[in-house]
Image 1 (tube, one colour):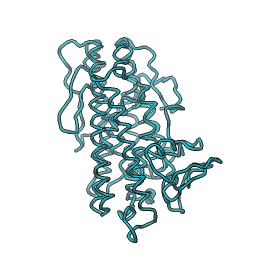
Image 2 (cartoon, rainbow, N blue to C red):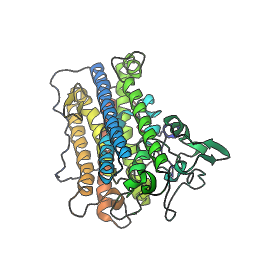
Image 3 (cartoon, rainbow, N blue to C red):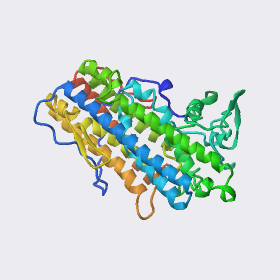
Image 4 (cartoon, helix red, strand yellow):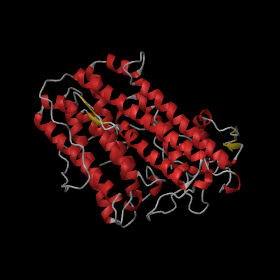
Length: 439
């Protein structure tokens, strides 16, 4: 297995069917975030790009605050490892994913984000690099010498003939171990390393249930289970600290109060370049990454190893909030964690001035994709017989396959219109990243 890093992601020209098949979707109990009403005032391209930078800053600020909340919950867990404090830390992790997954809509069009995100969101990972794993059924990247290194149980590890001192677990050490031995599956830091340390392996396959790591894995003395509880706590704390410092750095890149940062670089470019980055970013997340890497790959291979939030069974939310992030940038609307809304000049406004019919089509397609992703969320969170993403992709699960394929096709539809919108807004040959997938 390997995660899809920015450094080796292939870019392909996109040739979408001009009129993709529309998918009828019934209304669900899940609330979709419709594009805000089109602004009746004329907006300029520069205003739209300026607001885009404001959206990025607000989203990363929320992600940073949520990571700090997670860090506090982890501190409580390590100070008093009980079922309750473990549950609270898991809940804080789930909440931290909400703004971060929306932030991925800023990734592909902005090199500063794409070059950075692997340290925070790399997946899938060979969890045996980090901690103990069940010997039976552990699937890892073939030939990965780090797949069973178990940093937590070791003072030094040897990968590819290189001996590394891991006696002191620090944020700097974890950052240096990512992709050790040349394997992208060697992921030592980020959200998914923390997820594994909070939930443990999900050994349920296609059946219901997430990881079941006990709180006693962080207990002191003779109450410790599975050994090395102190080092496991050190690892979790270091990974959380690194997550915060990484998010602080990215938040600063989008701050209007900082000089010589990425925001200033972006706003110094012609507005048309800003629009290109916006449209390429949401088109690439919509098509190659979300429809392709995160859904199509797992479904076609019936592979729960390719599930995004695989330890916690939170994948439906991960996908939903990726879609929400795309919607945010198109509509210019972002619902912040504190309940306030950030609104401003948007791509929807700008497109409506150029081609009102296409703008309305894209509005409807954005809503349709959120409804389709909302269906994944609805089924995964049902009170009776919930169906998590790893159950949806099981061989023979026709209902699950239909739900996922509906979401994929809705995303394909909207990406075709995003490409048309680019042409209307003076951005030619957009070519969103397909990550090598055909749709």
